Image 1 (tube, rainbow, N blue to C red):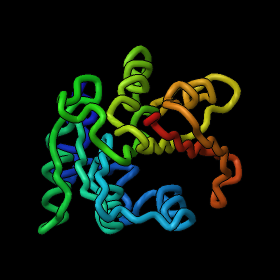
Image 2 (image 1 turned 30 degrees about the vertical axis):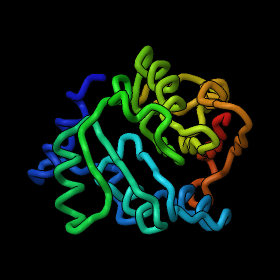
Image 3 (image 1 turned 180 degrees about the vertical axis):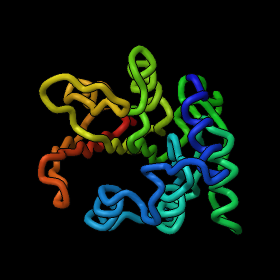
Length: 198
C-alpha cells in the first residue's frame, strides 16, 4: 500500500502545518456504542486495530481490557500515537494491511477496521477488504465501521463503502446495520460485525 499521502499528512500535522480531520479526542461513537450495548469486556482477549492513526480507538479497546496491537502505514502516525499515550499498554507498530506479518494471521479475537478501507481507491480497496478477515482468530469478531455510499458520483477520498463491499468482509455469520448520524441526518454509516468460523 502506498504510504505517501498519509505519511505527508501526519508529518505536516506534527509540524503544525496541517490538521487531520479525524483527530478527535474520543473513540469512534459507533465503536463506543457497540462496546456499551454489548457489555464488551476484553479481559483475556486480543485485539488488532487496522490503520490506528493517532490511537484513539486502540486506547479505548485497551481500556476495555483487550491486549491491543495497533498499526498504521504511517510511521509518523505511530510515533505520534506513542507520544500522546505515554505508558500505554497498546503495542503500536508500522505495518501494511496488504502485507501483514505472517504471525498475525488468525491471531486476534477482535479485529477493528474503522474508516481505513474507505480511504483507499481501487484496486487497493478490494485487496484491503480481503486482507482483514484472515487476521481474525477462529470464533473471533471482525468489526467494520465505515461511511455508507450514496447514489451518484463520489470523488473521494474517502470513498464510502457500498453494501456489496461491506458484505465482502464477511467471514461467516454477521450483522450489518445501516445507521444514521444524529448530528448529520444526511450521513449514513455502516456497522458490521462478522464472526469467524471455528
